[in-house]
Structures are given as C-alpha cells and as structure tokens.
Length: 275
Image 1 (cartoon, rainbow, N blue to C red):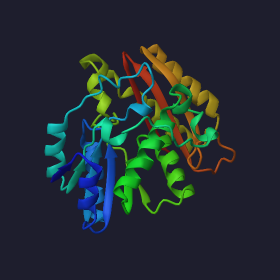
Image 2 (image 1 turned 135 degrees about the vertical axis):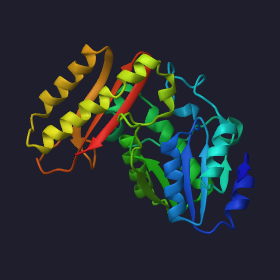
Image 3 (image 1 turned 45 degrees about the horizontal axis):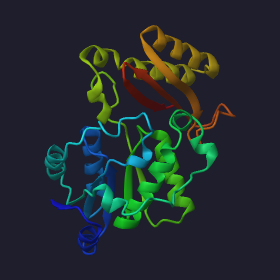
Image 4 (image 1 turned 90 degrees about the vertical axis):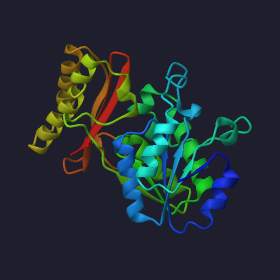
C-alpha cells in the first residue's frame, strides 16, 4: 500500500489506477470500515482510502482534539484489506488557506435529527467530502449506513452537483450484542459497554412494532426515550422517518427508518434500522 501525504502524490498515483473506489474515513478504523474497504475492492480496480480528522465537522465542545489518531494501526488494517493507496493529509494540505467556501446542504435536510443537535456538522462533512471527491476523482465512493443522515446528505450533494461518482451505501456492522461499531465506542467504560446495546434494542422494538402494524409513532418514540432515560441515558432523539428524505411519514406504506441518538456517560451513540 502506498501512503500519500500530498495531493500531488495522490493524483499521480490515481492517474493510472483504472476504476477507483474511494472510502473516506477519520481513522481509528474498526471492522465496519474494513468491510467498506472490501466492498469497494469488489467494485473497482483500485481502492483509495482517506484518513483525515476534519476540524470543520466538529462543534466547539466536541472531541476534535481527543479524537483517536491511530495511523500506524490503521495502515496495517488497510493493507490487509487490500487497499492500494491511502491519502493521509494534514490540515495544511487540506486547508492551505482558511476555508471560506463551503457546501451548505438544504436546511430541511440538516436542521433535523443530528443536525439539530450538532449545528454546522453537515456543512463541515459536505465540504470536506466534496473536496476529497475533487482531489481523488473516484468512480465510486462508499459511506456506511450507520450515519444514515450523512449518507442522505452526501448522496443528494453528489446528485445535485453532477459529481461523476456513484455513491454506494454499506450496511452497518455490529458487535454480537447488536451495538453498531463506531470509532467512539472506545470511549465507553466496561459498565457502559454492557449497557450500550440498549439503544439498538429500543430501535429494534420500534421496527418490529411498526412492521406489525403499530403506527402510533409518537408513542413508540416517547416510550423508547423514556426507557433509555430510566437506565441512565440522555436521549437526544428517537424518530421514525421516511427513508427518502428523513421527514415524518405521510403514508403508512412509505419506506421507513427509525433513528436514534443518545448520550451514555460521556459518549454519544447513534444508530438506525430500516423498517
């Protein structure tokens, strides 16, 4: 695997790489990331991964400074997964001057759910992903479904801006007890880790109820948030939404997804299930 720290080096390698798949990450890789790398390898001649902890998507009280940076271990995992090139720029390479141009996704898509609790987050995500797409110019780009709203925002950005890359979603990878794999799971204490699957359990309960014909979404959401609160969580939201645009359901036959975010101790967990 070749490691590139500059745009010029990465572009030179990309020029002769054939069909390219890009998997953007912030590092501290887990099996969910590696599954995306393998999926990318099945769809392209060359897999390019990126590792960049993007300051623009972190809020003022979030964990930018303490976010785990594990480049050496990440490189071993990427090489074992068959990744051909890693783009690992520093901030000077990605932002050689203050970033005064940004991507502002549609307010209706980013003022809800994660966007309500993390203002500015999706603006930062969309800006850095557009920049990575311009740098790498991949044929396909892969993003995990665990960050469901992010996937929707980025898919819409690529389509509306006419970016010549196909966005492919990757299924959420889970631990045996159902916890969605996340780089931030390492923040959990042993006691919190044993409690953490409760979020997935509540989303599963709602999904099962909706599939069984229960369309009292507000009660299902309220009951699930109360259950989390009773066990020491600080829930932000649990919501049943349309998959297409994450707005509240209008028709009972709309394809749906249930999404949730809650803080356990000092760690904020998110998850979702398609219904």
